[in-house]
Image 1 (cartoon, one colour):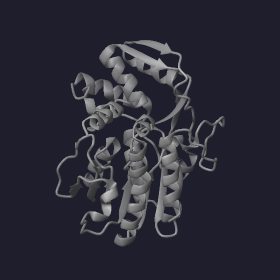
Image 2 (image 1 turned 60 degrees about the horizontal axis):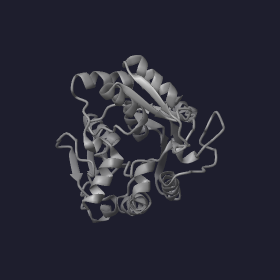
Image 3 (image 1 turned 120 degrees about the vertical axis):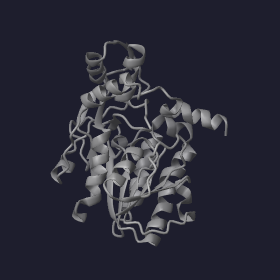
Length: 316
């Protein structure tokens, strides 16, 4: 297939693009490369260093069979840092992507939303039919973008993924995600700082996240719809203790009400159509530990998304 990946130079996009190419697909990537480009060169890869808003100004000659739409301002603090950029990248960018898709006669679009669009839920099983009550700008943007895409479900095969917090290694690493951050802190400082700690977060290994996009690229069109993607609901305290068990370190808990997000995901719907996750949080922790001692996991500025964006905005 000829596949377009928006945000293909990102944390997930980098691993995904490389795997798509290794699976025999031709891939075009649109990414403004705010955090760099770690993609391997390939004859099957074409990279456009452009904003998603400029997608209709790019001369992509090949047909496009599938779009995997990852382009986004990555998380709550980043969205709050530049609200306009968040709305433009996700919602306005998606309107441009729809125009492009109609012109190129694209069949299928897979969109990366967020598992936290539900807001704070008391239900033990947060499934796809529950109402959305996003509490942050980032998740309001995700919700609106979902609705834009779903309004075109009669024109395209639309798949919406609501992923859990992703963990594990990528060449374009992120050290601001829960499991990654706590693990690296234990490795680098022998200390883990936990704010609050009782918040429940669903998790998914990055390898499973990548495999899910490949799975949905091939699944029957009758499976179009919205899917949660998270397989381990754990408190921050549980994750910290799991890290400590594998990496000698001390845990310091700081009482905090700054981050009230606490939610669980139920992904039975995804499992019912045949997807099977292969890895767990403990795998991510152990893999990061090995890579750290192999000196392949380092503390680079652009691995910390908010701090890096602040730096870019300061010098803009």
